[in-house]
Length: 123
Ligand SMILES: [Zn+2]
Image 1: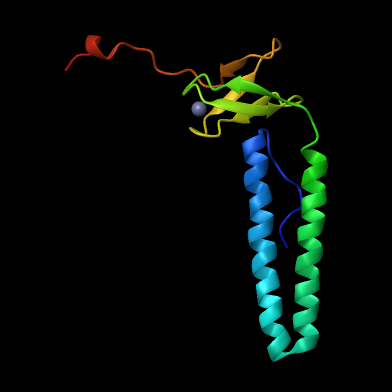
Image 2: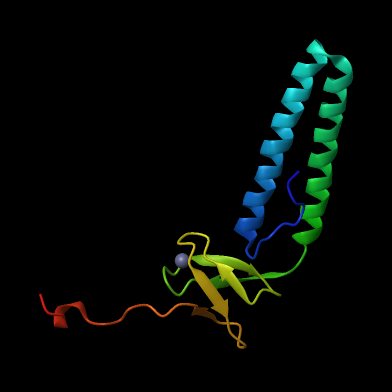
């Protein structure tokens, strides 16, 4: 059974996780309906559990998503990420690189990028 802990730092990440609940819940429900025709007692249980999981997931994610978010721009690729206020770090939605939020609320690079000028290197 998958863990119920949802790890997310940005609004887009949360939306992605939410759609996973529907994918898993939806396929569970479909499986349950198929089983209703083969072996009704199991089919009904699977369908009911999938429905409960989807509803519970929606309520849980809705609760989590209530926190205020603010836009931060990725220092690597300049993508706007809607980051939840309490997060001190996040992975960029687009380039997936690790970004830190400093005490001024600014997005800073977590890893130093190689700034050595390429044209100075021996060939
Ligand atoms: Zn990025």
